[in-house]
Image 1: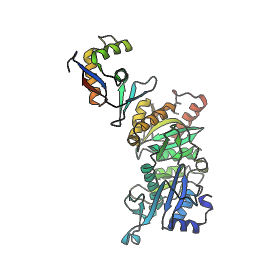
Image 2: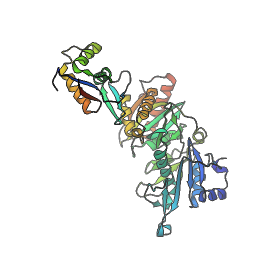
Image 3: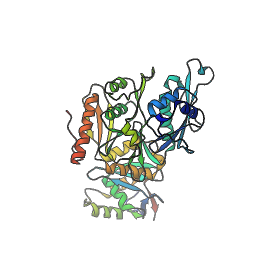
Image 4: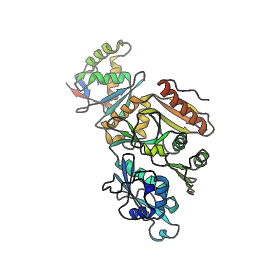
Length: 100
Length: 317
């Protein structure tokens, strides 16, 4: 996937992901009701999922929102890293890409 | 009426015909068997349980039948049948009491899907439940028996029943099944005469059933919220060690040890999360000395209940 492409991302169609975490813990649980799989994610990955939601958006838009939400700088978390993370979440069947 | 109030003659007749219906916690079990020794088995291990004389409906049914063909007479065997299935290999007839327990466990785990079920033992003290979740041979039944003999209320030694509506733990209060060296260990501490005779078994080094205490049976309709979740591991020649475990990791372990987490889907996820929301703490727990382990658990319960502190379990020693 090329940065700046017209590809958008969203949660897997028709799937309401469920997230659960406990205060002070480094992990977030994510339940994918379609597959029945439960995943253990770090907080940043979970935040990406939360911000993404069921509505489609581009990686660039998501990246801007993520930096604003978390206070991370572009140096600390680059767009390329977000792209890599999105591909990983896609491989877990948590999100999917669509052409705009 | 409880089982011990029923005459042996009537029990035997019921066992041979429509079956004896016993309530174990929320589950009504129908037990059928033509084996005459099952009358004594029921009296010994289920004497305090409510007998439902006119129950038309049972949640689970288990039949214990004599072996087929020559196995009726030569090295006689017993066969367990439930829901038109034979879930276990036939066993030597002397193991009928243990096979009844295995059959009931099998039936509950295959049918009681209105609960989230996890492999493990549960005991309660001061209104909070301790979950001991582990695979076989981890020493959870030994720990469960030792704690029960110290006054903890037994919920179960094999199946953690978690109510879907509020994640409360629900008792079954059925006998504990001990194997091998743990039998003698528990028998030494048994001042109440709860440990039954050792059933010779070369494969498992002997089997003995431990009757639940009368308090466990009398209060078997009282659920409790979880207090602590432990993942015990018996490791010979090691000091007692505990390691706090993040709830998210405890969740994954409990889901792995569950009988029906996948089957329940989102309800399973929500219930397990709600259970851990209530927990004071989760621990990996390694032990070899039973007295030391029990002492640690008693201090953990006392400390948490008295101070309602979740993050600082007591030191060992």
